[in-house]
Amino acid sequence: MSSSAQDTLLLCLSRIALHHLCLQGCPLQLILIGIYSLLNYIRVIQPLITCTSCKRPVPDHMRNCPFCQGDVGFPNVRAANTSQERAALLERLDAARVSTAARKCEQVLNEFGAAVKQSRATICRSLSVVQRLMSSDSELYTNFYQQVGSEARLPENNVWDRGRSAVDATLFPLYNNKILFGALSLDKQCPSKYGAYAMVLREEMIQQRATVFEENSFVFCQSKHKIVTGDPVPTGYRAVWQERDQLAMAKLHSKLDAGTEPKEFPRILLNPGKDESNQDFIEVHIYGPIHRRAVETVAGPQPRAHEDEVILKSLKKKLTEVGATLEIG
Image (cartoon, rainbow, N blue to C red):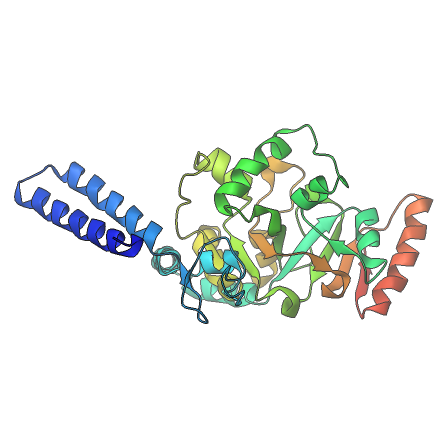
């Protein structure tokens, strides 16, 4: 018997077994456990996507079909775009609308959503890191795992670097080494702990490969939801780039009231904070590296050291080469 025939037979038997449990008056808890197991099985034998070219199932983590190398889309975008994720997010958004309507501020929620539609992805790093990326068309900004793997960086001896592998592997199973992290911003700010200089990315360079997530994924998984490696991530907390406004409204509606003004939106969306304990932002997940031509603006403070002033002068010239700007203040 072929594997596909075995799968079909086992699925039919599972359905029959569940039907039998219901007829026999089996306790509801056991029936629900059975349904959960069945759904998990269906999920295993029916991958998220089938290659449109060769019609074969493609593993969730792959960017290209392993059989014909056809393009099947970015795996983080596929994961955020499932019917389950979108339905759960819309449920949260509906609850946000009910809440704001009851508090007479649904119009403020809509205005906030419209503002977030114009938000940008920012990546904050030190001046030296930004300068290195902008120095040449041969440079790429890669993620933590690629930097460590190429021996270009050492992990830091802190809870973040020790625990990030487990968190990232849970969110991006088997492709966590492809994901870069940023933050949504309305005013060229980003979480201060990652560096003083914000690289604001051109939307057209990331919109097809970027998704957004509720908050710092480490905090979400380790502190708030106690997710163990391999556990499913709760649905409704991520979205494709084009629907980032929906996630922001679902998450932040409680911070809005009838007196909230548009000038307050940037700090509601992103609180840069002074340390991890008081930072809050919507995390951006970008598949693949960043080229200097994906950078639209670099924003940051006036440097204090003479050496940094020299770097900044050189950086401004390099930004001009690629049609990007420098904002210091």
